[in-house]
Image 1 (spheres, rainbow, N blue to C red):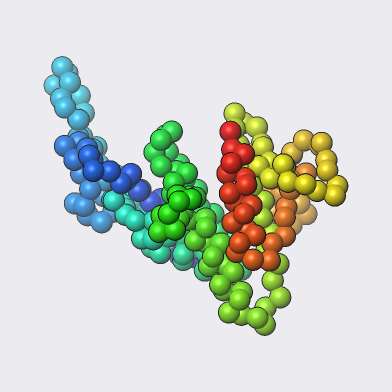
Image 2 (cartoon, rainbow, N blue to C red):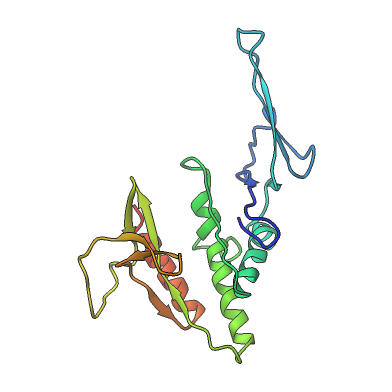
Length: 201
């Protein structure tokens, strides 16, 4: 996670669960520390505990808390003209998709992306003096291959050309032949998010 004060922030979110492995994982010794302890092996000299310090550790945090504390500042910086990226990393089943997109059936549990979309449109709706264009693209990387998750949408100029990554004259990384859809409302953007999500591998 990037912000104006540091290039990269690393934040740990534990998966909310009623059966947390408290015998092995300790959270809260400091607001930024996570410790892991496992039973001793047959080797008495083997290491059995580890401790790491991160920018933040969010234990049993709600979607709203994650967004307000870690993502909203980045969205606000983007609206001021800075670049910002949110990346979720973890093993299968860790909760990355839930964190990013949330639950379709629960507005309270909507993810970081729907919340960010809402904030962007609220910002420009409150600032009519700004002439802004919002566009949406949705890509997946699967087995080192790029997949355009919006390629199923109808278009006036369909292409069968493969996706390719390149750097433009300004040094910005772009993806050639991806679908980029201009949207004018939060509802349109969310529809594309849900369309792309259903096309994920």
